Length: 114
Image (cartoon, rainbow, N blue to C red):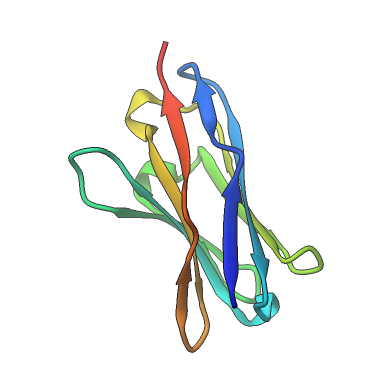
């Protein structure tokens, strides 16, 4: 059974940084397109960033220049480095794996406040 487990969330002050991880199991990770999404209270879930099987990244506008998505196929893990965090980045962050099927993790909370 495929599992995606996010970690690395927490509380950080505005301007701070966090690095999220998404560890996959029972998945041919190298063949999966991977993405990060987030869901803030009172808002719809939104796409944050994606990385192709070949390692090409794409970012939502709010993340360009601040967020970096990466993957380590040897570790079956995807990362999201988030810098210069803002209060509006507060959300539950989810990872998604897409092969023939789509899989989601359980999410990790990121809170940005002073």
